Amino acid sequence: MNSDALIMLDLLSAREMEVLKLIACGKSREEISLEMEISKLTYDSYRKAIRNKLQIKSQADWAKIIMQMNSKELY
Image (cartoon, rainbow, N blue to C red; front, side, top):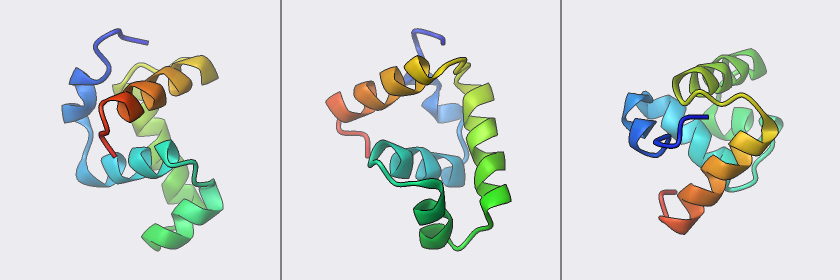
């Protein structure tokens, strides 16, 4: 994961950012799909795009991003 991942949040589309914020809030794939009125496959596409744009390689990287977002109150 790039250490400047929070700076790279600008690379995300509005919908990708919405997905990331809901992930940071602890919502499940099912909950996010229902709340955003998207299919689970669309959710998977957004998650993959987020992972690629922020260079997330592991669950630990996801945790780091979420902790950084929480500490900066970005959701």
